[in-house]
Image 1 (cartoon, rainbow, N blue to C red):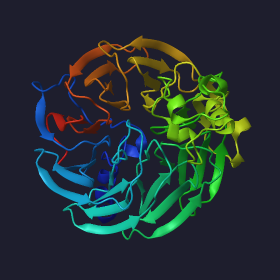
Image 2 (image 1 turned 180 degrees about the vertical axis):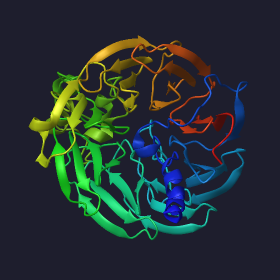
Image 3 (image 1 turned 120 degrees about the vertical axis):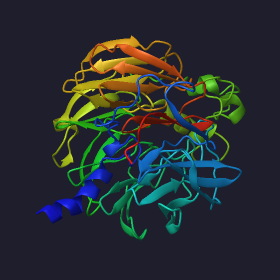
Length: 457
């Protein structure tokens, strides 16, 4: 019995690491850690290492921090020593294909995944690639090109011996499962029924892969790729990750009660029945987004194309609590609650110590009852103005909220949302922090920081 326990111990330890986007199963929580309350360039700084630009988040495994980046027509995977910040290795790829994406995304937005011995990276302009902990290439799986003007956002995740990737795009979406040791495809679930892009990273629960997409939450069998259940009426452009609390799945996606965009006639300045890019860009809120409307790429937007975009997410949207289990279409039977007022846009929800949290632009953080979706309290975190792209993480009775401005607010866990500290890094933040023992790792647009004391290695 002791021998069996020793055999399984490393597996359990690796599972507890921050091995994927948002840490263990996308929860954003690593309770056994104790990161510092106050930190910055001159306080509790373990190290700072300049890294190339990328919006992907750091992951941890085997005493290393793994990142992806892009620049100079190269796709980069980095391994840094978690204790010292020294760069262990850097591997570069040339894109197999490129496509224009919106400026708020980049070629290295998906975060890598690691099992502590290997690292797995996904680049939309290349596909999947795996390296050993020492940086030796193990395998590569070319994928794409993808049709997603805003860029691909979902990160790969590991489930046992399987590597999973959700590839949501404008058409021909799919969920992919490959052998993590060989890169061979085990199954590919066609998701062509999806009507729009999605950016949410899957989670795994009781042998099912749960994917939140535009308008739907779906659960697939991890072993076969067969669709088990789905819930409709979920808003559009889902991001971050869903989270699980007891028997509920909590997911968030955008929408509105009425169309938020102008009518076709208001944009068709010359009244010729089609919208040109120049006409489209006269609207400050729409400028730069024309390619996502022009679905047939003929250089014009028709009434049908525009009205599809204008009607996105009208009706059922926001943050939902969906009872897990069931089979087939569970929309009417398993949606327990819906909150349409204070839900987050880009950052994923967080459930910690029996309270649900969400952060919105402007630094508005709200606490909820996770079983009912009822908002308890909303406050603006001190010095928290600005946009939020990083998802909240939690440990040691504290919630960490990283804003684009470079300020990281630390809020006491609990429905009252008391701000304990605001730490200013002075550099923009898009990536979600990672937690490890006494440390918090934060990627800015310029560097990767480690704050706090000991690492777990």
